[in-house]
Image: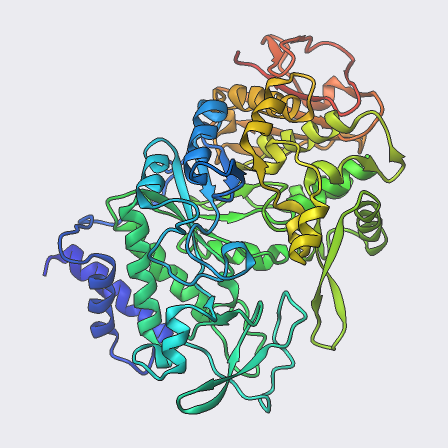
Length: 582
């Protein structure tokens, strides 16, 4: 065994000893290596050194379901591929296709077969074609599987190894501290060949939690990651990973073993010749979310979950003070890590990340305003038996159709401003397809499917969508056109590298949210200003400290900026990217 192989093996053994202290870590390490690098595959001689080269300012991501676009005649994945090339090539270079596997509920997150593509969407060659031209993200739904899938059916029949794949508990166990995002009962009684058992269900009774105390579960998911990577996937999204490890008598969230398993996966990715980026999905308050960077040795990227509720509040209230206060406290991502910035996703707008960031009365104003535009609110159970708002169910476009004051004529500009903030911040910007397409709330789907989240999961008829996009006056054409134009400008700016320096500008007027970005080579500066209000706002040019002997220009409007002027004026919801290099 070479020194580098010994180094990898010993590091794996050390992590595995944390997770499975009663098992032989060296034997487990060999099994891990065989699972992730089966015969015929190779690994790097040395681990990849943490750096800022896995991404660049050219990166921007589309989030979509495999069937967000349909026509009743063609495979949805073929339609998605056509849409990507026809409308987004040169604008976005990455795509997250939400679970594209066979499933039984939760729009793909109750997976019944991790190794197949849902035949209603297409097949692996269709995935391969998209991955050939776009950086592809897939979901590793590793906390649970479908109650109707092969794994759970084999468990109920007592078939090895699946008879020990699922987490069992007793109604008499102390489960009062368990943290969950749902209000349904945690345990479900099921009949097995060994008699009745109670299985753990963090999310729903069709989503049965796996038991990672059994290392065979971990090994199987490493083989699944290998399958995805071999099919062109470059970003692995660890869905609901915070709940992975359970322990009776604890909150069963963010446990040390969960972090250790992510460190193990990161270590494997660092030795992979392919580019593999781990993204953790942890919709929790700031400190808990940041913990998934570890010491720069866990996730490569984490979702910036406070952004959606904070941007929503800023745009509704016309006041960016809370957004600015939070942004000033955010540390830069560690070397080799990045934030994923977004406002809209397939889920609702999470309210847990706003805890401690928005006063309760202002949080309630946001909730009330969303309800006024036809949105919905989903609740979660609290340890004391009460309930609390977990997420707002609405499209982000419709959510911004009014403010705390009411409806006005600034809907389009307000929405574009909200998405421009996402483009401006340190990190990689991501956009849900229904944000890019100004999709309204789909109340018919909520009624048809009996699920609040369906309001934000519309399926566009492709011919109808193309007609809308051909009509320059439609909301779909205007939003896609404006966002695309800004993204094309953004991808040429070194100061928008995901790890470029960021400083929150302390402006005196809370109606303008501003950040200063500086390229890694320190040659380019961009002052990104966003008027989150419905009024024209003049800010002191001196507050930006523009160097007077350099020319400055707003990249969005193309206007030259006089560094010696007393004030810079922004129209309602106007954004500026003021740079010294253009």
